[in-house]
Length: 429
Image (cartoon, rainbow, N blue to C red; front, side):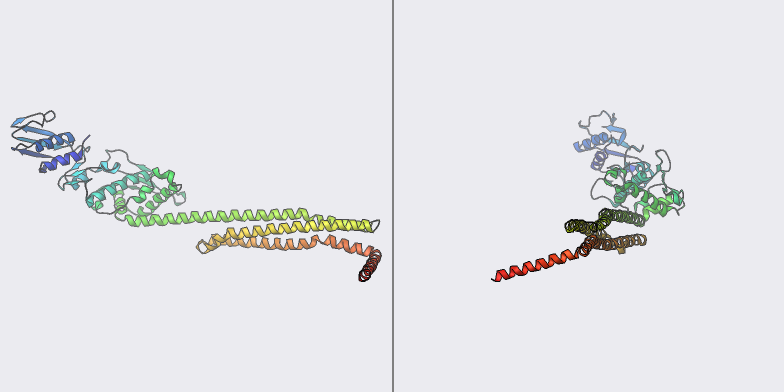
């Protein structure tokens, strides 16, 4: 494995000899252990090979020579590997010409530009290097988002294909041909957005698949008018901020729609729950109110009673039944008040956001509130009326009993008055 850092250290220690095509020459007649160490480090770096190594005028095998030995003169020609496996380039232009591998994978942590003496991992980082790293990372992230991409390293063009996923809009697709040149490197792009959309983040973001879909749709919408893949890529890089604004607007529209849909579901669920609770109240009332006609039917039995005592027992029973029905209705009234209070709490939050909701959601919410309020008013009137009705058998029984036995009641009343007068007189004595 080659070590670019070791090569750069040795190359600088040797005074950065001038590079001709892809090789350079070095020679000296003054012994220096530092020079020997630098040449040994250059050999160990594996960045290239020695075409010729002369020690004291004699050619030696560079792979086996012991550089710790003293010498009087030394000279060599070193040829840098240009197979693409070693990230050492003469200039940015050469890097651009040999950049195919950078488009398909992460850019190497270390690469060196000989003419500019720039090591990518050194601080301060050159602006062009920083831009190169960002754009190469952006291309790799785009490949993760693309439906298809060309995986043939020998291909002249690296292709990224994005297909629209909305059948209603028809099948549409665009192809990007990522590439690097000095104009592209002059653009300032950020990778935070694409970092967040990578499949590795799926466990942390439940909406990631939809966000990736929105990104693709936004990309197609933004670049569909461009004629070719290279032109599309250039436009995307050079106007990255504008594209990002489009994506964020589309995402915001989706999230708002998702939020409104969720709000509509909450309103519908609350409406069904409250209506169900009111239905239960009505159902329980229906069962209890059937006791009213039964009690009225028992009133007829008073007319057939054998005496005042039997009639009084009937009246007492009917009064007790009416009281029980009235108390049950009172309990249902309390239940109704709790349901009404719950409805106000549930809908209060949505009513506060009413102005933010779209027209259809506002109409849906207002209709739900109107309907539930109408149910509440009707139920309230019914409970009030039924509680009055529940006392009708008792009132009817008392009136019938008083009419049938008015003579006995008058006699009993007079007797009671006489007894009361005698008691008062006795008390004064």
